[in-house]
Image 1 (cartoon, rainbow, N blue to C red):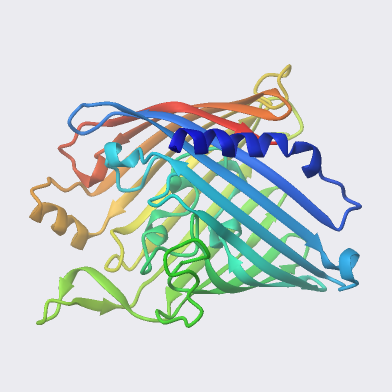
Image 2 (cartoon, helix red, strand yellow; image 1 turned 180 degrees about the vertical axis):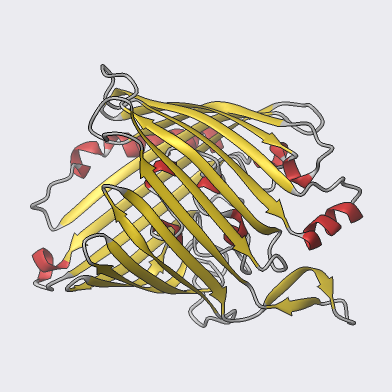
Length: 386
């Protein structure tokens, strides 16, 4: 049944192509992207295993000015469907190895928001992916490891994770452009992520409070420099310490991050390269990570005869919080101070609608265990985009 579902979903993304072509004159734009990963991982015990993962993105964007005369208004709807295996069950890393892996396979309404533009300011309201605009940079986008999407120190927070893939929360986001390249962006999101398709659905009552985040910086042809901070309105569970009744002590969860991205040469020339570095810290008590960093380089137009060829190398470390290390030691693990990972990936298009991306990853001290064997993962990502 699972194989049949994967095939059916793959065909859906492919055969819909004639109806989903973009047209700037149309008030509604539809798109479908099918992503399939075949990945094999080693395990701490040395046993390798292979997995198949499938991710279907269906999006619709409506220009309300063209559609209904609503000046400056737009609507975005994003449906997400995931099936397939869970390679991190074998890899046993803290940060994960595949950014389309999900704990529970569901058809979800991932995003559904309305945006209103007023001059150089825009406001979005609805189900919203925090990582679509916060804690993100373009030159890290080709890498498959989840840590390059959003820092692990915030990704591991909240009752059900923050409002990122694969489950979002209700949010209000305000973005203001400053000068030629400056921006200030802020959002208030429900603390408990959950959307239509998830057990329990959307949390309309904000029983767990909210997550507030702000980011400011500069972004343009010269690159990007941004700094952000986040905090939860309600206290969160300590990862280790408990009170006299055995309940987790409640802590104030917060953190900050820095993003820097710089083109290394002319982006319009062959072998155009851009480098990035990101740093993040947290309170270190309400998340397994007290901080981390990611860095890497993206080379586009690697071969002059292959304009769609891209090569990317990235490395990251997730620094394990002291309380979580103590939990690991209680379980007999020789706790490491950090989990370290490296990734090398290449992408190219043999056809306009098809992208092939072989990928190789190495993780040291997987699971925060300095006595564990290095974990190796390799595979290929296949993307179909009509």
